[in-house]
Figure 1 (cartoon, rainbow, N blue to C red):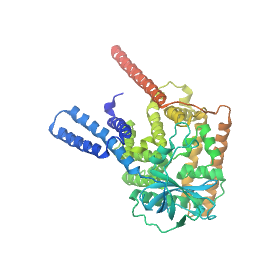
Figure 2: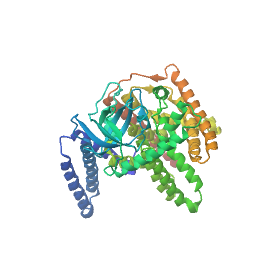
Figure 3: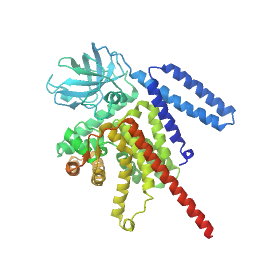
Figure 4: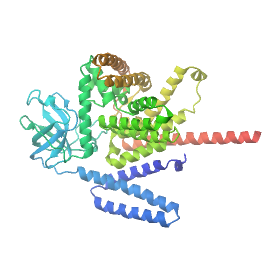
Length: 520
């Protein structure tokens, strides 16, 4: 494979290497020193580009710039999240930043501190459930509170750390710097100014508040609790209603990705708007409106890594369409990764980020190799069989790409993932399409109720089907213990297999071309 064709792939690899090195160097090398090194290298690159004819030197300096940028950027983010926590009681004003989750004894939510020593930071708060009956349960995103509590460091526990999953790292990736337990009488509602919160944080709080109001409006329709939980997770990214049993059922059947927002959801929005503005004269307007709708939806659901990746790739695809082409390559995926990692280098350790990009990478790369496998003649004659075969190839490619990470982080491997995808993906597609109609019919309550009933039936059917698959003997392998070195070895073997198939294909093409020339 010629990497010259994929310049952003090389940049992404160098940037990832820089972020990993920067994480190891943090605390040993001052961040300001790395900023100075970066400034010197950028100046040297500019001089080399303007005064030298040596392209290799300029390229080398550019790669060094990207490498040091990764080191400095991750150090800067780590430094911003490093706050002193002395465990003493302190008072602060905060805003509820994410939808509260009601547990057995506490109500958990994320607070954005607006006034106080940690102003601008996010903390994980656990409200005592029986303090003022019903009051905490009415907490919603955007509500202001004045709290007096102790802010403690986040630690890993045996319950939270399954496999190699690092709960402390997970919290820092999401910008959470501390945890607190809030007793009865130690908090009250208050009007809180959000001036000291970042612009993006204020926008996300506003959009999450709008999302919760939209979900609450549709909660009145006749859906079972489990069906509503799945629909809310699949369409609005709200996983707070998912029970432990439902999560385990989806995980054991290999359908956890269905509950995560991904390119399927954004692709539906993009496809619908593209159909509306299919006329050539309105093509530019259609692409612009599609991008506005996609990024508005991304903000509405809280901009998880998989949605950011899909939104970035669809934005690039819109520009590709406007230039008259229709192909999005590995270069596009690498460019999306570079943008996300420059914006937030800590996202590299987010499990959702890793699995989202690896799944798409597997589909882009491994699916191309599987496409060359000779298929039976009946597949070409029967459209349904061809569709099933395509779904099998895509599922196999994505599962091969994420399986090592799944075993490493969670110690599990779903054995019936191919059967699961044949059931879950069609049902998920129907649910996403009809849910868009359901939300759009907010002005017509009766018709919205009819559509919501159908959506509930589809969600119930999917829950029942996946529950049956999860109950089959040997549905999931548990207790898999592999270390990071073994994960790297698995991906190295996958890369070697891919390169071997690529070069065998190229050799066969060359041999066939020579044979054709000899016959002439």
